[in-house]
Image (cartoon, rainbow, N blue to C red; front, side, top):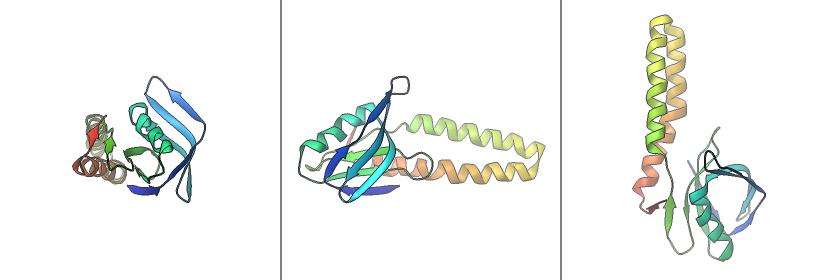
Amino acid sequence: MKLIEGKLKRLGESTVNMKTEVVKYSVIQIGDQTITNFKISRKLNNFLQDGIETDLPTKLWVTGGLRREVMAVQLGDGARYYNLSIGGLLFFTALHFSITAMAFNLNTGFGLFLLVMGLALYVPVLLDCFRIAGIGGTKV
């Protein structure tokens, strides 16, 4: 998880996937950083857009790696908002590890590969979810 902080200067073009309730921005300019191709949930996007209207700094908690998603937003007044699908993430983590258990029966090397891949992909994101939920704020 990465924390990006600064005055929110620009939200670029966005596309909305109505089925998954996700907004994808082509560019977000915050502080002296420009980040590209980031996703954010539609509910959390409402609070991100409020950051444009204020001169106070905005904080974004974002995932790293392949997901590139905004997990939480803190506005200049200190209000924190997060939208985490911990249940969905737990489901996919359990599904991955059950497939890994089946792969161990077929081939130990392939099972070990899936185990390492699951630990690298799911566990850090799951821990970040609990970390963000633990810092307080309002779930949207």
